[in-house]
Length: 255
Image 1 (cartoon, rainbow, N blue to C red):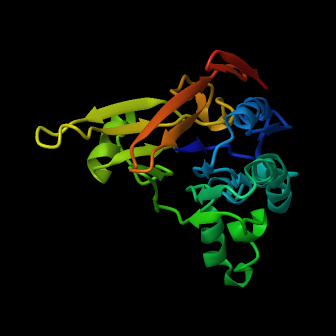
Image 2 (tube, rainbow, N blue to C red; image 1 turned 180 degrees about the vertical axis):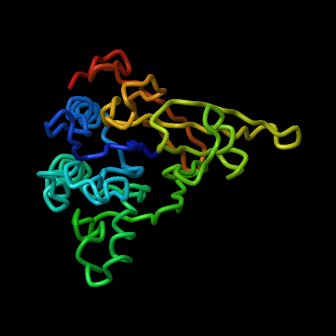
């Protein structure tokens, strides 16, 4: 039986707010996850996309130099690797490391298309030194037993996105991108023994970005862990994090 852990939307990076440089990532939530991972000892770790926020090269900030003042792509990549990649590599040893490219990270591709001479310099594998990781391109999927993982940016559906995911992929599907928790189930009248489930996995970044203008949202923090048997059958658990804290198997974890 294989153990896995999946994390989505860590968004290492910063934004300018009120003249100050503010973190978009949440070290407190991440520290709690790492404490759990040390106990759980997964065989497979899936980073489900948008580990790097890449706001410093975002098209949303074009023509707004004040929005990225003091921010550097290389610094974000170096610091992001130190926080989110190196500890996982150390913990996992020879375990499987999967990295699904998110839509924010695909802005690196947009940049090289604008400036082709940057090809091979600002790509994700080079910036984060992902030689040990299996990289799934943006829009791609990774199958673990009878579970499928995607970033989620190809999906539409709003409050019904978990349903849309099951209908689109016709599999049990896990995804991030929407920074919220959501579940949908579908059972065929013919193949009723094999129900399909769609689950949106929350983010691990902060929940009140500047572009939200202080409005309420559905964002929450969390991660996924589970088990996959030799025949592909699985059981997985969604964990919700509140203020850097959660309880699993009767043990409290705090960042």
